[in-house]
Image (cartoon, rainbow, N blue to C red):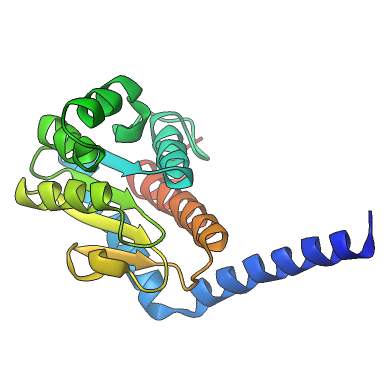
Length: 198
């Protein structure tokens, strides 16, 4: 390893730690995450579900969070209904081919979303057109709408019920913040619904 390699590793770790610390100190961030958790908990208590979606790394984060809820996070408990819409490659590619890529999440939300569900769209910029349209459709259908974004929130900032803004403009750091928030969300949901059961 060269000195420059070690320096890069240490720099990126320091940057990641700095963003996590900024999230911890940001009352707006923590109160929004708490409100999102309450909305998801309420949805589960009333027999509803969670829909998640994003592009690229955000698609992977959507699948990751859904997997923690359907499977388990810390506790061995009943599965919770969470669907990552971007995981259905046949539906996505059919809609993208027959309509447009901007329509992919809107069409899936139309098909699967019910009033009382929660929809979480992940986009580091807050500007991904298909995520915007998916969340607009969710709001029109009576879902609680949540955006996970970067610091600015983009166009989604004012268009959703809750906008969780990671205080960074760096895509990699924002995505790290999103999965940290997703893990905390899963833990809060488990604790509220299942207590401390193993």
